[in-house]
Image (cartoon, rainbow, N blue to C red; front, side, top):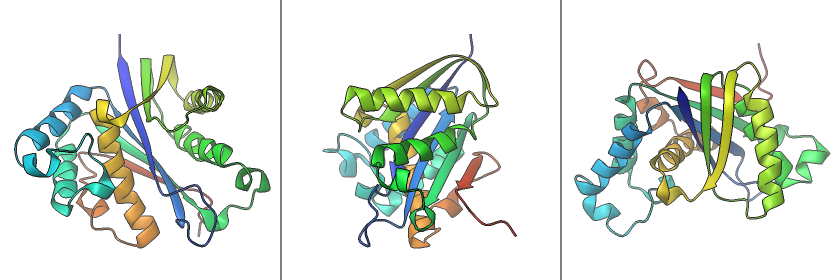
Length: 214
């Protein structure tokens, strides 16, 4: 039976004040071979970045050196069965009072928009999202909404969604690197990391909500 794995993380915050991030980015890393992702993290820890990562429980974009970020992107470029999908919300274009008044619904909306852009044909899908929603009711609300959106246009049998600690899953740590890279481009107009992604080997989809079309 065919199983595909989706790892999800975000960059930016859910705030709407002047001090908040300009954008919210939610990213997904999709693969049918999570072992490739495990090897990337293990090799980074054991060899080239042993000193930098010696005391780190997990790899995070915000806490990594430029060299480590670039190394991880280069290694993801070498994978054979991975793709990335990113949903970027410009908060300046968020006019819905309902979403502005409920951060959890706002997050679910962006994640759901991303999910509806994922097209899969698989017997099983395992979704792992960095554990941030502490309350069971919030996790359940997210799971139901995300699964509904993920099934749009896809042929999927069973979907299992887990809220997991990122240090236990290489895929969550690597999607954090991707999400941080995309955030740098859309929030800070810094494309240094996104430009290093080899789109011919590691395809990416960038979904900008409410982007005007010429």
